[in-house]
Length: 297
Ligand SMILES: [Zn+2]
Image (cartoon, rainbow, N blue to C red; front, side, top):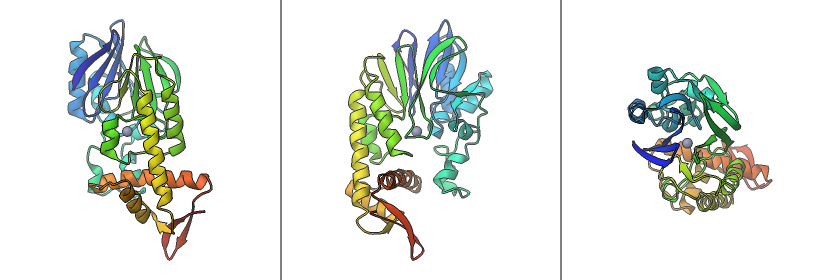
């Protein structure tokens, strides 16, 4: 994990999943904690080297790669951990993440890896959108649902930590079909991001390098989301089950799904598209010959 000083009072902790620090008067808020215990230890060493005292940990959303280190940070420092409602339930009960990916059944071994099953961390308080001060450090919490049900972005020290509200272009290309739970909320969040340029000196995504302007990324993310939704709509030409629709949508987008976990992540995004298409009156669902089939409405 590399320390990148972005402004006089905000740092990016650049790793596989980024974390961040907002500092005021020798006290710091840690934004996300990386994937696991080892990352947490690296973060704590960086905090020590900066000679600041950790005042609180804030979690943007309950995906294991963003909060997996929280339990270690809290156990070693005793600092309180804050998370948005609903996300907090998963931080405290991380089995919920592989459980929802596995349709609510006890998850098979592939879903019990640290990338989808984090260490449990008690949550000391809930984060709500608005201006917040914790331990004397002021920051702003900005609602950013869509990639996770109640994801929040954290802004302070001239930097906005956007979590997975927006992916860097290279990450977008790598994922092909990124993880979304709600298509309309994602669109609204991306629109909101486009209005933030000029308000902050830097934007730090959940993965990749910080940027000075988020608008162009938000546009690229929105265009990709529209493409995915269109590929799902086009794959609905005849009644088919989720597996068939996913297969055809992935083929249209030129994707090969590499493993079972990515398959279920992709499945959630396809379902989010089907849900949005149904709401728009262009898809319906029924059981045909014991298959759950989606058809054009
Ligand atoms: Zn995420």
